[in-house]
Image (tube, rainbow, N blue to C red; front, side):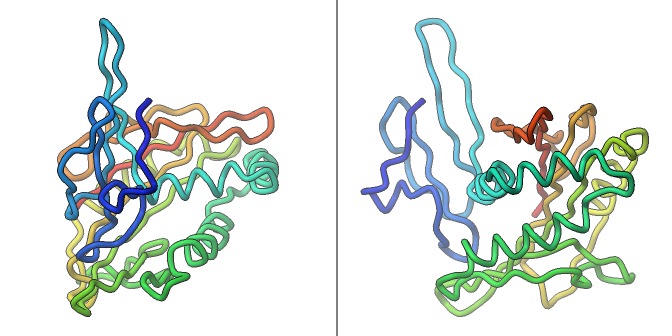
Length: 223
């Protein structure tokens, strides 16, 4: 796996340019052209016979970092096995964590339960509002879904509904331009057949190890 150099500003895995999360890509160990308008980092892993592409995203990296913290992973394992679900807890804890790691320089502001959708009272779970260099703002909005032992039977339906919500959504002007994300924490269900932004949901290349439970994180986004 070829890694991004922390010494080259054009290869930083996290930063903010033009309001979107900065990304760069590496091919066979050499940096490719910086892509300031893209939220995805692509890493190429090659061998004598195969080549694979790993999509690495700076926000998803922070989400997995939070979830795999020893204390949080223990809580996730217990929450998964409790009746009633754990999505509300994730909203609070993850929003506070992202505020700390992304908003420390006064660039990114984390807000929960905002009326992003125009024409109805639907709210997003949380959003990251980033100030551009020219003073304008860009919004990354998130919908979360968390499978638990008690809701596994309806988890796919809930993920599908959020995908539809994002696909059909029109954002209130105060949040434009906006990119909407779905992030689904899953143990037993595959949701790759659902689509957001013209692409099927992808299973992130890292997993969450919550005690004896291994959890996948599915994601997709639409600008």
